[in-house]
Image (cartoon, rainbow, N blue to C red):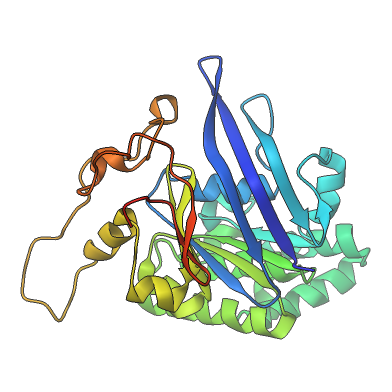
Length: 318
């Protein structure tokens, strides 16, 4: 049994009284000890997918309209909030994109780590704080014991992210969802955070969904990659396959936009246009109006088709 299976997930937001689809039939599987990277521009639905898995898209503003989210075989997509609260932080955990806003500014970081241990594991406050100290040691926060009583504003961005990782790991989850955990960190701290996540995953056997727009990070940490555009997965496969032979025009455009140190000075190849808004989503290929290969047939909805092995693409011209 896989720790996580997502089947035909559809999530919507209410815009001017009309439900608009932000995640459109997304499916993927995560095996134990595996890292799947979810890649794409801002506004492609990556974070909404993760928040839908966590049960954080709720009425009246948003909803999971259909699909299944199987957590260790149990469909949690339709569970009431009280049941989801017992799973969040226990069997599944999430590292949010911005640690300064995700952490409670008026609560010590030690108490924030201890909170889930008290709620989900029934530990005493003293035992939970001792476990928090051990977690701070694991994520390499210096002087761990003395820092438990500090507040988030007393930490740098990189250290706040380590606190977020400690909170997520506290109850030994089966699945970790990491939403751009290295955003706004310099490359040295970024490498350290990626190393911490890789070590924690190896030690616990976790499955990890890693959301990023940075293809360099994908190469470093992921086993498989799913490229997302306008609420759909447009290409997926093993990292080596996608990097060696990207098939979807959008995937190729993402790679072309990466600056090359080995190449002569040249202008970056920006992708023209923008991701379509939820209330103006094309009926056919959602990338067609930005695609250099657009032509007859692109006005029709595109289905994922297998190219070889685990490599699949949502494009009839690929």
